[in-house]
Amino acid sequence: MQTEEEKIKRCIQYLNQELSEEQGISFEIDMLFDQELNKLYTRYHKIWGNYPTNSEVLASSYQKKRFALSFSKPYLYVASIAVFMVVGLLFLFSYSSSATTSETVLKQTFTNYTPVNKRIRLEDGSLVVLRPDTEITTYFNDDKRLLCLEGEAYFEVAHEAQRKFIVRHLDFDVEVLGTVFSVNTNTRTKEIALISGKVVAKLNNGTTIELAPNEKLLWKPKVGELKKTKLEVSTQLNWLSDVDLTFNQDPLIDALDKIERYYQCTIIVEDQALKKLKVTGSFTHLSLEELLTSLSFITHTSIQTNPNNVYKLTPHDFK
Image (cartoon, rainbow, N blue to C red; front, side, top):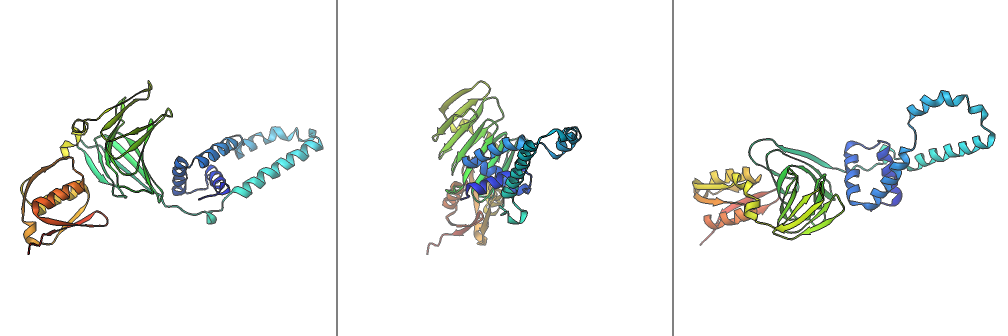
């Protein structure tokens, strides 16, 4: 937990452009969550804006020089004190680069300008499906997960109690911990649809709305119209249908190859007979865990879960 003095130092260093790009991103993310830091930055930003730049001082120095002799000693005394106070404050609150702690921020940008949906797996294990003409930029650090969205996307968020997952758009923020939902920013009516879990939508007019499963929020920011409706999941997510998985007597090893590319995961099968097992079925709108459970049932296998989205299928031992 940072003290107020440490937060002031970060604000001044940010305003003075002394932070690296990574540290600057970290500071901006912290301001989203820390109201005290945000207020301090707003205050010092106003102060900073009232000071002239070096070029402004130099440009006006000639005009000021001819009036310098007309100042009385009291005015010069007050001016000297003011200069020393400003210099003292800058010295007190400025960071040296060696004293600054570096905070790692993982920034990634994903785009989909193809005519079909695109699935990606984020650093935290969350699954995102991007509809065509969609772009997201993620900013992840040890405390927060921020994702900026332009377009429409479907999310299966990995649960992390210590790191909020925030989807940000110009007109709203959506805060979650672990849930399944979709967001559409492409149309004049912005949509937030919750399939499972819980989300909190913070609109740019100051309104905060909490959604329950199978609810949809419709928000028209230009006219301020807001409506919460019942969600028809099959209708809301029908655009995901072009990435459904269907198998017709496919060898398990071939089916797993499609599943791995679809869900951005790794599935290990060592048993040679199991690799040749034929698989038939259609899997629609399933999370990876749901699909693997179904696959385990129809292939009579056990699933071992390992870190980094690695899974292992082994035959049941009926002996």
